[in-house]
Amino acid sequence: MYCRHCGKELNENADYCTSCGVSTNKGNAYCSFCGAETNEAADVCVKCGAKLKKLNGEPKSKIVAGLLGVFLGAFGIHRFYLGYTTIGVVQLILSVLLGFFTCGVTTAIVGLWGFIEGILIICGTVITTDSDGNLLQ
Ligand SMILES: [Zn+2]
Ligand SMILES: [Zn+2]
Image (cartoon, rainbow, N blue to C red):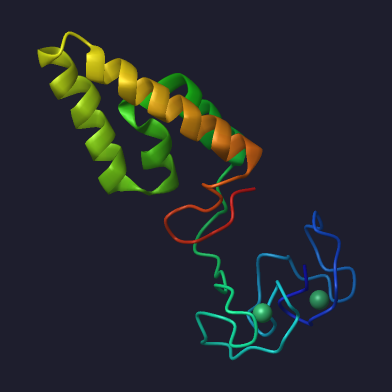
């Protein structure tokens, strides 16, 4: 990846730019994927088409979100944690409300759904950002 503040190429796991010292979550002057200069207000990189992630609030933990999904996935808690409220509510309704009428069948299904999402979050695939588009840390 590239520093979004100065455009220097960085180690994928770097937390701070070794050149300018700015956090790799901050800045919007360069595309973190291809290193091209970007407009400060742009939402996507015009060169590679990547979504330019802006940090809104604190980055959320991949491990916390993943474990919530694994253990409390049936109630959509990991979705609430990540800010995906709508799908969290859907999971909650399916498992609690419909679970009551289906003798827990939908609860088990949503539990498995949340469990798989939890694993995917921890592995850093499919679900990699919160609802604000911040990469999970
Ligand atoms: Zn930099
Ligand atoms: Zn780019």
